[in-house]
Amino acid sequence: MKTASVRVGSNVTIGLGSIIAIGVEIGDCCKVGALSFVPKHGRLEGGAIYAGIPAQRIGSATDAHTLRQGGNGGKVTVGASQSGHRQDWGAVKSKLADEVSARAYDSRD
Image (cartoon, rainbow, N blue to C red; front, side, top):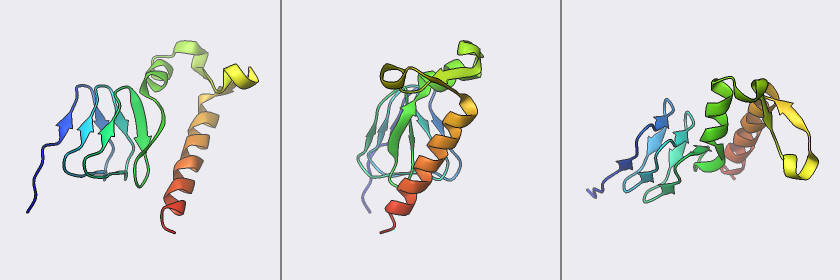
């Protein structure tokens, strides 16, 4: 049986039912969504949100933290440099959920 260390930084959140394979490094303040799979020897950047099978970066944990603290009036800027508009957090969560579902569906092919 092969073994390798899994390194988990500080203030990391790993969602329920996620699988972290051998040799993975997870940076500080990283979030891994529920039911995600992080393949062996993967490296997840600190301050980012990952989800899916296999886990892929879908956002920034610092944006999610700001929203939980009530910053930005409950709004987050999405693509502001390109479109200049703002969306509420509910719309952002819905978009992220759709993206994760699509990626999970695509990975079954």
